[in-house]
Length: 116
Image (cartoon, rainbow, N blue to C red; front, side):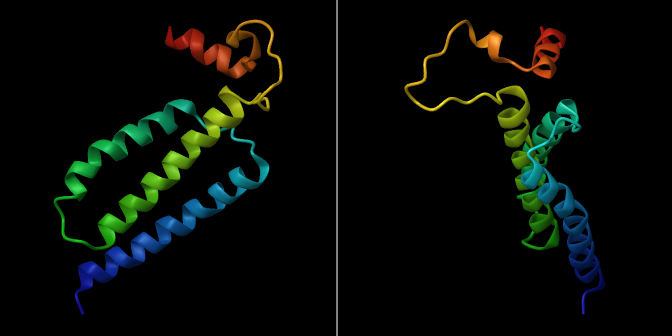
């Protein structure tokens, strides 16, 4: 048996197991305010850049781990945008008054101010 491949497979399982409780909790509670938007954004950018390297490797644990982390980071970004930045989605036909900025949460306003 190839020891590095075995170690990579075990490490992939451990990393996935360490991330799953966070994803399950975020999915169940929809409370992702405690997660750092900078970390979520950088994780997604890093995953996109790292993909160039991983695609050059043979199929194995590194690719599987990268795909898992990429999906987890993308989910966290989606949930953060959906539940923190733009939490007030209205069904079609509802009348909306004021500008889009009127509907942002306090955290989102702070983030927008820091970025501008």
